[in-house]
Image 1 (cartoon, rainbow, N blue to C red):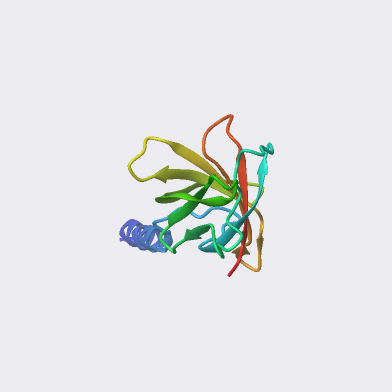
Image 2: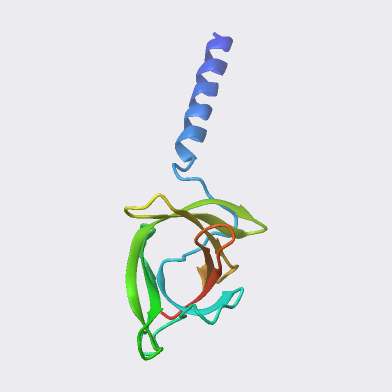
Length: 146
């Protein structure tokens, strides 16, 4: 009888532990990164890369599900930066290093998989992030505008 009680108690404890675990993995340092961002730099610098249209309030928008819209700029005949295309896709956080989350960027209708590095959060909100489209390509730096 005592063995049965211990077995039942063990099963109850295991059930409680299993019900308390999250379905999504938690990554140290991951806060809220959805929102609107403006590009503020590229490394290494290349004068042929347009950073932004001066009149554009946001260059990157990320929704709460990790879906995003990212404006890519080109130079027109007057050497001005204009929106060349708007890329859409999804961000998946895959890990964290010293409380700095990182993940993959998957563009819709493309095989390209980029990388996103998210800076430390302030009060649970991330204000800066870096996007690398491919290895050997420039890194684009964004800051939060909302």
